[in-house]
Amino acid sequence: MKSYRNILVAGLVMLSATAPAQAQDAPATGAAPAPSRELRPYRINPGDELEVYVWGEERLQRVIRVLPDGTFSFPLVGRIEALNKLPTDIEGLISKGLEAQYRGQVPQVTVSVRSPSGMQVSVIGKVRNPGSFTPGKYINVLEAIGIAGGPSEFADVSNVTILRKQGDHLVPLKVRLTDALKGSPSQRDLGANGLPELQSGDTVIVP
Image (tube, rainbow, N blue to C red; front, side):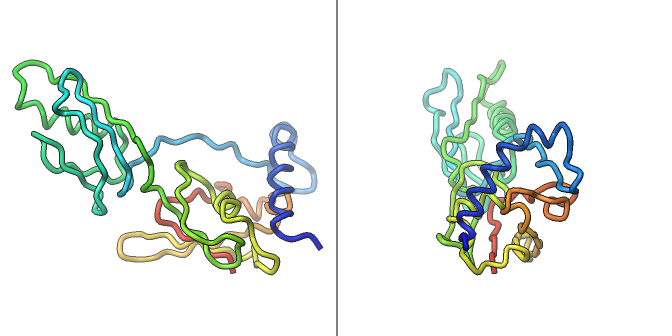
């Protein structure tokens, strides 16, 4: 009997190989085509390392770590709320904060994410390598389980739970991955929006 880890690897390979054909003509068996994923802009998390560059002002060049409360301080500007903002949003906030320091136009401000170390997810339960991971990009629940080594032999992949922080509460999201791990994701697995994409701070539980 093949282990779930082997099934996971085979399933991911089959998904990759069959995606174009599914997009053109969905099988009559009811299996749903794998949804296309659009890359979405990265939003800043606590723990991320940012590089800030103000053109022509070497004294204002900084590498900054976002604090656990989602803020950081910048010279001549003060405290900046960075949580869930885009780098371009931060550029605008710094530019606005520097307006009082210049008679003319404020020099161009560039903000980049040097290290997205604040983007962390955890996978626990019946997986081969449970723990916390920093993927450096947005991933879905199936990819997270793959990073954790795949489900162990007796894992119940039909009853996976994602615990998500919303304010002071934890919200459970139920996920069924039975068919997806076999390489034939059904509409029952994918739901209306495909496999759930994880947010920073999510914990995936494989019972």
